[in-house]
Amino acid sequence: MDTRRSDSQGDGLPFSVFARDCPSRGTLEHVTGRWGSLTLGALGEDTVRFNELRRRIDGVSEKMLSQTLHALERDGLVHREAQTTNPPRVEYRLTELGRETTRRLLDLIRLVEGRMPEVLAARETYDAAHTARTASA
Amino acid sequence: MDTRRSDSQGDGLPFSVFARDCPSRGTLEHVTGRWGSLTLGALGEDTVRFNELRRRIDGVSEKMLSQTLHALERDGLVHREAQTTNPPRVEYRLTELGRETTRRLLDLIRLVEGRMPEVLAARETYDAAHTARTASA
DNA sequence: CTGCATCCGACTCGATACTG
DNA sequence: CAGTATCGAGTCGGATGCAG
Image (cartoon, rainbow over all chains, first blue to last red; front, side, top):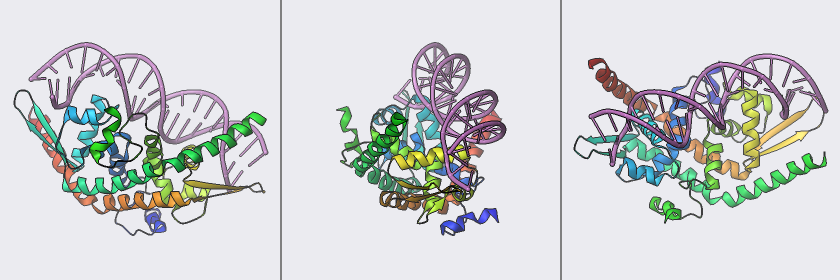
């Protein structure tokens, strides 16, 4: 059966990201996506306002941050608290689930960052091999 | 100072995904991207051929898998071994760095999958609140 | 079998402008 | 400050066709 593909990865969970129509795939993408991961990481343990968040994530546009925040809020990872005062003040912070998720995410990010020298070296090797092939052709 | 942003996340690493021009951002995207994460997870501890990999990842196109594999190979996460025999046989497997990365990634995936019921519930709540607002308007 | 090249539509993203 | 609406450029991604 196609829907049992997850077994080949040996997880035995009720959902499987490996299946095309699995809902966890969407959530995983919100979490790991370009802005999702950065947003979660930038929130961390803090309670942060919209523009502060925007400043923390270098390069994110208003639109993308807003969009990302909505997706994460919808998935129950981020809590949004709006005060209808003037000036408006909206604060975002991680839910418990969001913190758990972010913890794992940061483990991953830290690993990747810590190993970047290896990655960069691998890239050079790869590129050298490839340009050599192209150049010699 | 802008380049110290990473400190606000308390990691103190030499790279910071939060900075726009940080090379780790690209690698992180390869790893966590739509197909990258699934490819790494599908490789696991195995040595897998191209089409077998394609079968494991439900919905991936040839093009995307090939592209993803190249990116991961370039980053030193995946090892590619091509036998120039006939028929051609190309095997992919994770490097040590790839396995480390995948381990973290699977921690994250498992968490997300395990908590999907919560996510789904949060979505319903969110959607209900939103459609209510829209409907009542 | 394992791929690369090309075409082309769909969707994403970012800049801008505008609202409360 | 905290967004939403719109629009155009760019990228993603799938289908097809071809090559070793």
